[in-house]
Length: 170
Ligand code: 4NP
Image (tube, rainbow, N blue to C red; front, side, top):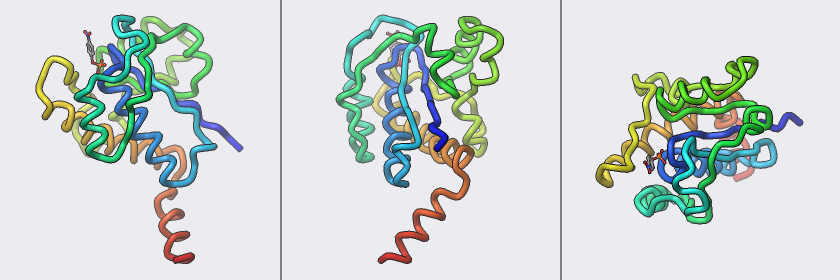
């Protein structure tokens, strides 16, 4: 079985990438595919090392039934570039930093997360840290769309397969 190793990256690892990790983890679990994935998140900075996600991120995620309270922030490490198959940047600045920090031969693994949700018309999950609660909701809307697109890109038709199973058995 191919195990997909996915790393979500933002600046602080307390707002966007923890929400992305939680949303994608939940989606994969809903489709019964948790064993096929290794999912993690990291920050480019180390300011929040060891901290739980921002309480506003926790609340926004919890409103959608996603519990991210047990996550703990960590800074990106050099070995992440070899350990993960796909390294997903939350915005263009993160993407540029990741390319600068990484060896050239892994640049193909570094992608804009929102490229998996072209219908959103943006590549940026705006940083909600210095804003209001609405910013976290907007970030999660974008993240949810990209999580669906990412899973569809990696495992085509998983939604159809799952709903087919449900209707057949139920
Ligand atoms: P994140 O948000 O990158 O989505 O986790 C931020 C969190 C903290 C800071 C910046 C962005 N900070 O400057 O401390």
